Amino acid sequence: MTSSTETVNKQDIIDYAARLGDDAIVIGHRLSEWVSRAPFVEEDVALGNVALDFLGHARMYYTHAAELSNEQNGTTDITEDNFAYLRDERQFQNHLLHELHKGDFAYTTARQLLIDVFNKHFLEQLKKSNDKTLAAIAVKAAKEAKYHCRRSQDWTLRLGDGTSESHERMQLALNDIWGYSHELFEVDALEQRLVDAGIAVDCTLLKADWLKEVTAIIEEATLMVPDQDWAVSGGRQGYHTEHLGHLLTEMQFVHRSFPGAKW
Amino acid sequence: MTKYNKSEAELEASFQQRVDSEQKIEPKDWMPEAYRKNLIRQMSQHAHSEIIGMQPEGNWITRAPSLRRKTVLLSKVQDEAGHGLYLYSATETLGIERSELIAALQSGKAKYASIFNYPAQTWGDMGAIGWLVDGAAIVNQVSLQRTSYGPYARGMIRICKEESFHQRQGYVIMMELAKGTPAQKQMAQDSLNRFYWPSLMMFGPHDSESAHSAKSMKWKIKRETNDDLRQKFIDQTVPQIAYLGLEHPDKDLVWNEEKGQHDSGEIDWDEFYAVINGNGHSNRQRIQHHVKAHEEGAWVRDAMSAYQQKKTQRKVNAETAA
Image (cartoon, rainbow over all chains, first blue to last red):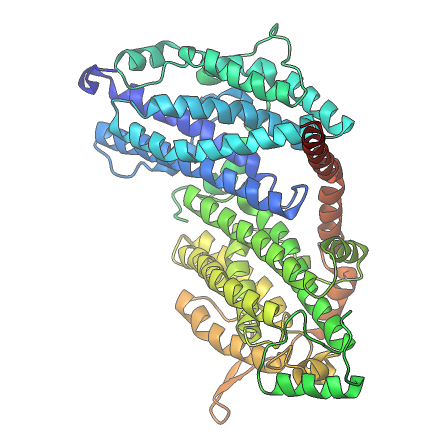
């Protein structure tokens, strides 16, 4: 990562930061749905914590995107909330894995395992970004991602190697979501331009380490890595599952019902 | 049970003496059985209120109208879970298990604050609940920082610090609404109107009608009466409503110069008892929600203990083999 950011199209960085914000807000939303519904109170607290971390990441990425947008447009009034509340389903560019429904506790655990391990590797690379703000966000978020990974690993072991019911639920969950993991490692034209400029992470390079780490945890939990023969993709192009529309409807309705209001 | 050489009457006399001289009663100290039961009732009711109280606000986390408000609300609800945990642990020092407390909540034997049987319908209700409901709770909890049972008193000190942040976040929501668009201001007024009276009811019946008050006062579990605490809340809320520029829901409220306090209109006690007795909008929903989460989590709790057992067994096996 040696090139200068000056030759880079600012809109690309705005879009990239917004994507990362979309990932974080959508998974944060899903996790927050657990509050008051967890298997026991300690988990209400823990899931709330992780949800708050993702919400915090979303705010940092969106704020960066908002500041760059204001610079670009000569405005001052674009904020993080414009990105979270005033864009539609086709404009959101989060990975599909993040938006899938809440599911049961095994589903949430399996999904977090895949996402948290991905984030840990992703953020280590983002720390080296030529975009100083993104690099600084990564430094902060990486600390939390390490904790998230430990938590996901612990729960995967407990559920995979717990009772026959928990084992079965975990395996079903992994089977159901595995095909959505592949797009985490895709790089489209926009990201490639930013990879070339030393700003974005080249996700294609993360797959081997991710798969190795996730496989080790899954196998230790006496579970099997699912078949690799299906893959769904499209989140980064705004081509979403039907889950996202409902999530955004719920998240955005108050904000959109009172245009221009301050909260 | 620890054996004591003194007679029951002597033990009770020295217990009362300790209470009278403001010494804290600790878990291992002798205490009258009725004191223990009374505390379990009150502390578990308090814990259950924190846990059930997560629902009406949790109901709005996914709809909060800005990312800042979403973050603050989520933190607040998470604090409540923490308070519930803390209070369950404090109650366990009285020789009862959390699982028994939860069973009592789910069977309806144990109560939670009836205010949570009111539905949280609008974003404004997040403001009114934080400001008024947490505000009323704080008035009560500040007083309980001096309660005679040590673990409860210390729990209250810790919880009060976070509760004042909760009240503040509620009032900030109301300020934003009150100075916002006409529609927002109307939302604030509507929430105030719906939550003001139920908040006054949170202090419980008038002292003359209160079933547990006399004994609780003697044992210093309660430090101030329902009516005294309610009066404090009424008086502190008047200027807060005025500052927001909202109309006070109590049309009979007048300043009483002689007493130095506000005379209030009468509370609708029929509503109070109706809601307590199951006629609130959300009574059934709150318990069913709790039962559902608990039942859906059963396999997770089972898996956790099965895994723990396996882990322990493997360790034993490894040590035997070595």
